[in-house]
Image (cartoon, rainbow, N blue to C red):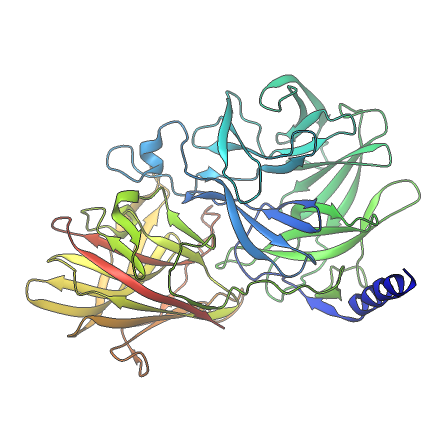
Length: 518
């Protein structure tokens, strides 16, 4: 027993000697919710129109994270045709899954996810017996619990804090699937103005609402009376530093505690064009029960000691040969599941006839690893049909791609730039792209490469190249300057792999491998 105790002391000491550097993940993972379950920590994030939705990551030290699952298997919300990216209703870019809650209830041994779906404005609740699933849509509530945060109280009652400017608390039914009481508990002040992004906690007999004043401030509300208040408030963040050079100030996000009541805060900060990325800091509590972020010289630091013994997990970098489709990927809108398969790689059949990339189904996406990284895809294009387009894309609301164009007896690798959609009338495409350069190619295989920088203040571009042997790469076309025009479009740039038809469906490609390296 003594040896075990000494070993634990050593681990604690060792953890204290190692520092991590923010951001903890340089990927677009916004609107964070956090829980601890067993010896693991789980992180849920917004995913907008990408499917499956509500990504879940896991860590054992709060610094190293791996992709595990999604709480929403498919975007089945109201008018699903929009989320299916079919003709008629249009599309759901910049809609879908925004800030939502994620929690575990010991009494039912279930995980719960709930969120108000932007574009449908109802609240959907999903449950699962394990983080890995299966996740099931268990309830639809006909009101919007906007920017919701869940508390499971000491007596097992489930509450959801929600709303903007006027913050409400909803008490849920015993099964956690209906609202039985809903009251405004805090009206914003003239000083605060607009507030949102609730998270809900209880500590030492007091209730806390963790709320963002965008951008980039944070407040906390405290009640010693009950979950319905009354609440007092204090500042937590007021533009306290830039732990990632060139990016914004930390805000929003969630708290989590270790078993020994050590608390930590993961916030996101704006690092466009790459999106919103997470940063971590310890939190301490004063004698009056108010939380404070541990600043260094009044600022959120770029580095802190590891909160727990370092625990490596599966890295984001490496090569995927698609023996399965991992949780690090999402489709752009719901996929046509009849048009893809795992078959000695990722087989993509053309799912759409269109000349507009933004209307093409079954683009498989991956978050860009910042501040810069390289994506390489090995593509078998031998089964493409006349009029097909297939390749790799860099996209947000602007896009550029490199890929194969099949036209009659011609097969060429081309770089297409200047694809653009705008938010007027529900996001429509105003430029379908310009073919900047192309080269005739032969054979069945081609390697396509994107070199991408998403640093917030320099190297904001993507460069495109190709290879016919997987070793020697030739640049093609021009750099894509990543656009951030201040348009309210929350997602950061992503990588994508696509295949679509312009004449008729029937063609296919196989992605033999996908590699990401820094």
